Each structure stands twice: as structure tokens, then as C-alpha cells.
Length: 349
Image 1 (tube, rainbow, N blue to C red):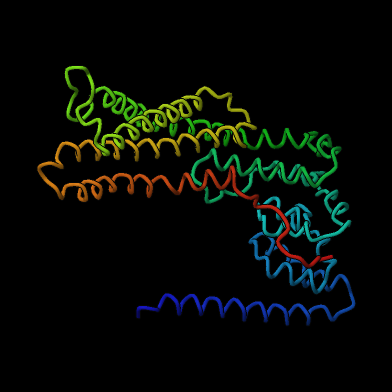
Image 2 (spheres, rainbow, N blue to C red; image 1 turned 90 degrees about the vertical axis):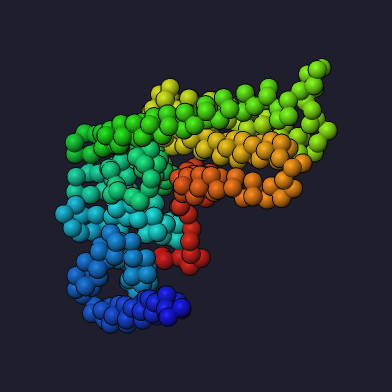
């Protein structure tokens, strides 16, 4: 019973491998007819379904068996594999473009029945992603648009579809509401964190002028020569500087222009820096508090240091657990490696 979850993982992995083998056998059997229309009828629907669901193994197996399947167009909009990958935001399928040779230059130029080129399709609103907040969703959409833009010729930016709209106009029109939601999410988030940063800054600023143990007649702290006092002073100063930095970062967010481009780097970067410095300021503040309490009680209660440190770790840990998922997503999406790029060494064409 203790390792039941491991058995479940093993069974899932085994089922996946067996399914891949079955798919391989079916694909090789389906390629036998010489009629291209028959082959297209066999491979077309599963190819489109697998692309929309992001099932990379099935897509690559069909392409391996019948490379011309990347040209299959079908459905209501007559989209090919890469069009569908862009529409449904399946980066694992779109990354197959990196495995293609010069043929990709031609396949990227194809349009659908409404004269939408692939950049128009990237400008359409993709399905909701499992991302925290509308601002990060907007960043994700921009990353997709910029990535597709790299793979098309400059003239594609100025081509109009059947509605006489440029790709940039399609993007702006389809993401208008998402920009508003992202703006509101950013403002609400920044306002909440600004209050916390301001409270921390107020507390540590006051603590700088009221050292534990007080001052002597000359204004020199009584515990100046104690090692713990240096920890107190350094922690208090660090907390003040980082909380002030955090507050400035959060205050700069509501005053932003909130253009589409701001959601790509500027706004997520400010929020990331603000969160990191806020975490450091809270941790430093609690360290300063522990040092102060230790200085006042150590001469009477020798064992006080360990419980104080353990108790101080509780709020820091809770803050990290609650905010770390958002911070990790922010840092990864803004500064981390791109979700696009070559994933396999073997060319598919």
C-alpha cells in the first residue's frame, strides 16, 4: 500500500508505451494504400485531433510514416498542422518547425480560407492557459505572437486578411479585454503588496532608532559590542532597503502605460523584483526581531535562542509557500528559457 502510487505511475507509463506501439503499427498499416486521398482520409482527422490536443507522439509518428501529412488541410478553416498548433497554443507541436529544413519557409506562408496567414492566427485569442492571473496570460499570448513573427517574412506583418485587417490589428482586437483584465489584476496585486512593504518599512525604520537595551548617556547602544547586535543592525538595515525597493517597484506598476508590450517584460519584471525584495525584507525583519529578543532575554533564559528562531521561521515559511508559486511562474516566464525551440535532433522532413 505504501508504494501504490509508484505502481500507478508504472502502469500509466506502461500504458503510454503500449499505446505508442499500437499507434506505430496502425500508422504503418494505414500507409499501404497508394491513393493519396485515401491516405489523407485515414491520417487527416487523427492528425488534426492530435495537434489540437497536443499529443506529440501521435503527430510525430504520422509525420514519420507519411511526411506529406504536414501539408494536410482540413476542418472548417482549412488549417494545416502548424496553423492548428498556433490556434490552440500547442508549443510542443509548433516546435516541430525547428526540425524541418527549407520546406518550413513555404509551409509558413500558407493561409486559411479567410486569407489569414499564420501571424493572423497567432493574433487570435488562444484557449485559457493554467497561468495565475490575466497579466501572465497576456504575456504568454505575446510570447506566442513574437515567436511566430520570427518564422515569417517581414511582409507578412503587412498582409491583410479577408476582413482587411493586419495581424497586429487582429491581435489588438482579440486581446482588448485581456489587456483590461491584466491591468486590473496587476493594479490589485501591486496595491496589496505595497501595503505590506510599507508596513515593513515603517516597522524597521522605527526599530533603527530604538535599539534593544536602549542607549547610554552618550547615545551609544548598550549592546553595541554584542555579536547579536550586529546581526540586529545589519538585518534591520537590509530590511529597510529591500522593503523600500519593493515598495517603489509596486508603486511603479499602477502608473504604467499598460500597453500590450508592457506585459511582455516590463510589468512582470517589476512584479518579480518587488516580490523577491519583499520576501527578503520580511525575512530580514524577523531576523532583526529574533536578534533583539535574544539580546534582551539571553542573560536570563539561556535556551531562548532556538525557540525564537524556530518560531520566526513559521511566517517566513508560510509566506514562501503561499507566494512562491506565483513568483516561480513570474520568474520562469520572464527570465527563464523559452518554451519554443528545437526539442529533437532528428529532422521530420
